[in-house]
Image (cartoon, rainbow, N blue to C red; front, side, top):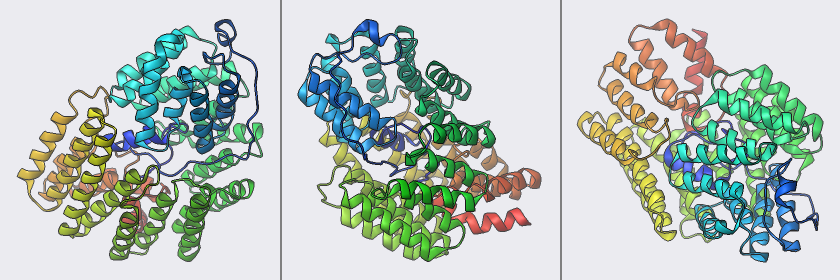
Length: 520
C-alpha cells in the first residue's frame, strides 16, 4: 500500500484504517504518546460557554471532564495514543458522555476501537447538544463511506458553534478527504483566525499546501514554522517541518528536523522513523535500518501498535537497494509475526504488510506470492470486519480485494479478468459518496491498458487515478506518456517524482529509475 505525507494530520488511526480500505493513501504509524500529566479541570461546559472557542461537551462528571480536557491537550499535540486513553477513561467515567466516545473513536488505533466508540457515541447522542450530534453524525458517515454526509454534518456543527476553531478543523478534514482543496484551506484558515494560537490549524494548513494540489511548499513551510514558534518544545511541528523540507528536496535540513523531534521526545519512535526515510533517500542504508529498528523498539516498549508499521519501512530499504526478494521475505516475517497477535490493531498491521508483499510481488512477476498475499490479506481483513459486525467495513474489504486482484490480473496480461475485477470494484463502491471513489478503478484500467500496449489509453486512465501521492500510479503514468510519445509530459512527471521524497513500496521500487530518467 502506497504511503504518503499525512493527508490530514489529525485524522485518527481508525479513520486511516477505513481510508486505506477505501483506497486513500495515508501514512501509517505516525501516532505519538504524551509526556504530559492529566490536567484536572472542574469546569463543566455549558452551551453558552462552548459557543465561543470550544466544542460542546455535555457531562456533569468532573473526572470525565478532566480526562476529556487532558485528551484534547494530547490530541492537539498529535499524541494520539494517550489522548485515546484519556477519552476512553472519560467515557468510562460517564457512559453518557457522547463527545468522549466520539473522540475515542476519532483517535482509536484499531478498527474495533473506532467502530465500538462510534456506536457508543451514536447510542448516547440523543442526550447531547445538536452540535455534538452532528459531530457524531460525521464519524458515523465516515464509517458508512458517506463522504458527503460527513461534510454535511461537520458543516452543520460549524453553523451551530461558528466560533469554535475545533469545529472548523473537523470541517477542514472532511473537505481534505474529498480533495476539496480550496474549501479545506478556507476551513483551516478560519480555525486559525478564530484562535491565533491554534496549532492544529496551522499544521493542517501546512500539510494541505504540502500534499494537495495546487501545492505550495513555501506556504507549507511558513505555517509549519508558525506552529514551531507556538510550541517549540513539541516534536510534531518539527516533524512536519522536516516533511516540507523533504518535499523541497532539502534532505539535510529534514534530517536535522527529525533529529530535533527525536531529541524532544526520546521515548517516541516517530522522529527516528522519519529520519530513516531521509537516510534511505540519501543512500545511508545501514543508518536507515538502524533508525527504523530503534523506532519500532521504542513504540513496542511503550505499548504502541506502530512498531510493525515502522518495521515495514525497514523492509523498504531492501527495495531502495534493488533487492525485492529480501523485502518480500522481511515483510512476510512481519505478517507472520502478527498472525494471532492480541495487540490492538494487529490485524490492520498484518494487512498492511501483506498488501505491500502483493504489490511488490505483482511488479516483479512473482504471481503465486502475490496471489497468496492478497488472499491472506483479504481473510485477515474480513475476520476483522466480522469481529466488529460491520457491513460497511466488509464492503470496503471486498472493494480492496477487487482492486488488488485487478492489478494482479493486469500485470499477468489477463485483460478480461482485470476488467471483470474493475467492474466488480465499481459495483462495490457504488453507494460511496466520495468523489474520489473511482481512483482505483482507473488505476486498474490504466494498468490493464499499459500491459496490453495501449499506452495512450493507459495515460488517459492513470491521469484519473490517485497519481498525486501514489507513486506506483504516477510512475506508470509517466511511462505510459513516454511510450505514447509524449516525452514532455513524461519528463515533467519524472522531475516531480525525483524529488517527491516520501516513502512507499512504489517509490522505493522505482526511485533509482525515476532519478535516472529525470536526469536524461
